[in-house]
Length: 448
Image (cartoon, rainbow, N blue to C red):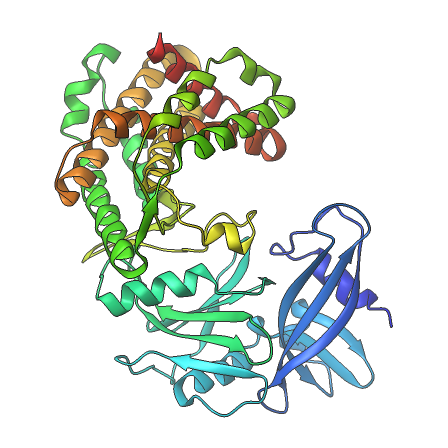
């Protein structure tokens, strides 16, 4: 049986990872029927070439025996006397899911898990968020947020696993977990229900605003800008953000334990990643990064569960402090790798690189004309000042400063992250490639 309508729908979704690849849907199976209209389908995709050869996608759908004009934009297929729509666009269908989380009914094929301690507001309707790349999220009033995982892999989803551990431990630096949805017959987790932080401000937006305000309102020569930066409005937030990350790291060690850092293996992986990246972006050969990676082979330390894909866009500032979100890890990695213990310095390095991106993005927008050199200088100082504030908060919260070995390790992770960014930008946003390349130039200059 062929599925041309479903294939056309899938190819146009932001969360479909197979864009640009020839594929066919080989199977559609119903996992659960929640009511007469709402069901959960799993769609098996097979690609003509490349890796992975197959993928599984989740499709919560609502089906009607006549067309629904209000859902015309979300039509998945029409046929056999049925009009099927992507259920995340259907407020009635989403109300069915919310009621199921509240009541934990006996539904064949799936289990609605609930954590104690919060009464859901079932009198609200859903609002779908736009722009999400990997999943589909929607809010129920001001109470809860439901995220459907679209591309599925067998095993425990780290977003659920880590949220549950932090919520159970009482760590307040995440949105509290309210529940999750899992398939009965397969080791698949389908959705997560958590606290909706309605009034929160996005960390990336706050950082951009801080940098933009400095670059456009401070009428100082470049060499005097540092005094103004020290009185700026983001360093205190960066400090608190460092404290937040250290607190989350400590709770994750308590919940999952820690292991021994493998210096030789980590150095080898970084070297291999650099070699592969240089084939994509030959300019990377101009930077002396090999010694920075080799230096960590002799280091000792610990690995633990971490965020895995931390940057300012994964943070929210609330009236009660910073929250970290989206603990799925890097979407391109398989589930086993995303759940593997890693050095906490990977998270720290990700945030440091994000500070540089925020300042560089604003400088890129404003940097034309006679003030380009001054703005670039201010961007560097903004990045350095907030990086130091962030590290100060992190080390103060954990109780001791960076050791010489940790400084070497962090420097390697920062460089490794920048190498990854160069390849990403070369493939997706060539005009941004200079941001990580410039960072690598500064890093190697510091090594001389």
